[in-house]
Amino acid sequence: MSQVMAGCVVLVTADRRSSELASALTRRGATVRHAPALTIVPHEHDEELLVATKELIASPPDVVVITTGIGLRGWIEAADAAGHADELLEILGRARLIARGPKARGAIQAAGLTADWVAESETSAEILELLLDEGVSGLRIAVQHHGAGADGLDTELAAAGADVASLVVYRWGPTPDPEALAQSVRDAAAGEIDAVVFTSAPGAHAWLAAADAQGATDAVVARCISGALVAASVGPVTSVPLQDRGIEPIVPDRGRLGALVRRLVHHYEEAQTSAVATVAGQVQVRRTVALLDGRVLPLSPSGLAVLRLLVEADGEVVSRGEVLEVLPGDSTDPHAAEVAIGRLRDAGGRTLVQTVVKRGYRLALA
Image 1 (cartoon, rainbow, N blue to C red):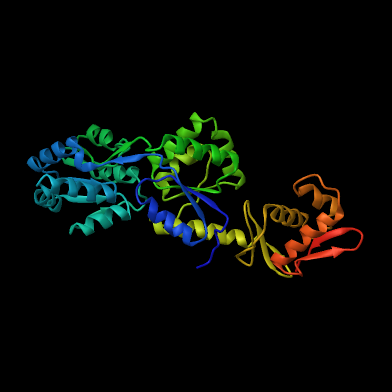
Image 2 (image 1 turned 90 degrees about the horizontal axis):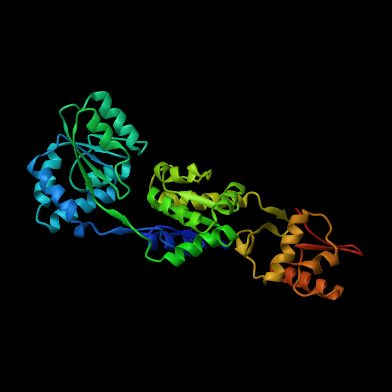
């Protein structure tokens, strides 16, 4: 598998399915860090959910809005643990089921049910528009929410005359490791992280709040705008907190973790097209590694610094003095520059760097 993300440090902010994300990114060469911004409170211990479920069974709804796939699965599991799964599935089967996006529809199908309508935009606003246009006065509508709450859906439907039952299937709890979260935003601001992955809007909110608390927000936003830090979001809803801060994340066409990984990989594949074409191959210098035709070069930090200097010169001659300036120490011996260039040639091929007599060195561009 292509190591297109070699040298990239990717921060995963999700609690749930973080190992799945990490494995997929690691296979592409990335170094993955994990700092969950939030935790999910287990639904089976949420007494409020069980009470609301019993009330819904006693007074069945006409319409049920499913906002998340994990929410529906968790709701059924919680009902099953309390001995009410069959009754819940029966009332869901009789109701009109509205799904907020393909993941919610998939969970409905997995439960042996059929979605009557799907909001392809994956937004509550699209669902609200549909229901209000049709008219909801006198209808009993159950809305399964995610841990962040109702997005205003309940209030608007109730104001239009509906009898609304709200069910929060899982709730967001605080980060399990506050120091890891704080360190992650400091490192993102300082340039130690290359990409941050977000899988929920509440998680994005919480990570940005941590950046605010650390005084790192301006630096994080500036790095995102410059392209030095890549924000990757699983979908348009998750993107909103980032966009509100001036960060435009990359987003997959479909709201799936696999699609999110592929979109991030594609971003770095596109970055390869901007690599420098040399007679030895395509050279790309990243923050911690250099790649030649997608292969990580075995370079020391000083070798990486010399190669970065040559790449930035874009084929122009770099003097021995300039090479010495990027090497550690304060040597003025031209031989030290020759040794550094020799090691660079050993790693990347003898043709990678040309010697220009009495002037210095330059990258051998194709």
